[in-house]
Length: 240
Image (cartoon, rainbow, N blue to C red; front, side, top):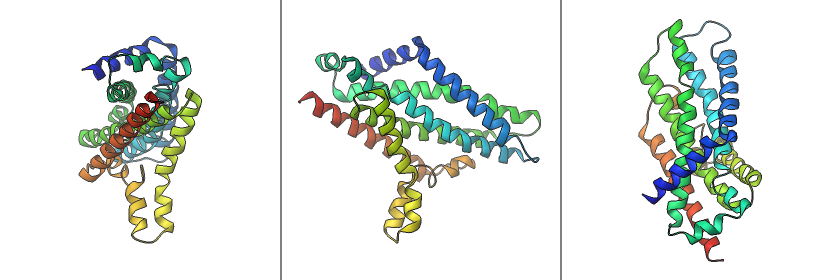
């Protein structure tokens, strides 16, 4: 319950400030341009190919949005000196982390909801598989959740929002590039790195309209581990 109260307060803070709307407007605008230029543009394509292209580009923008949203979650508290007030309140560290994460996830879900008009534009000249749309958006939400959790961990480590964005980006790029390590290493390491890859191994099935339990579990595990690590960082700082 306390986590939900924190999430509500944090989400209200996003919606009351100009920065939240600026993030939404910029990412939506750039995503729309990419959708028009690359997913819809070029030679005639089947509807499934257009949807696949939309989810391909949107996955990148979802990761960027997660970094921008998460960089302020905990780092802003340290930057403005309000973190001791949270420590003094009767709220557990895990409630603080979970509440801020849920607020960021709700904001990210709002962004994804606002992109829904793009795949629906395919209905103008083609047919849309709503199963494909559901799978793609589920993948975007899970990818966004994992990226946001990693960003929350990065935000817990940083003294300011810029460092939080840098830490988060470095960790996410490292997870994304695990597929390269999988290609240059031998088994069993190659299998380990392949399974750790944030995008290349686990998102393409969603992009194609398929839902595999292993991919859902992977994103949930990354989310849990990153939030657990962020909680431990807060606990360590509390006792310094």
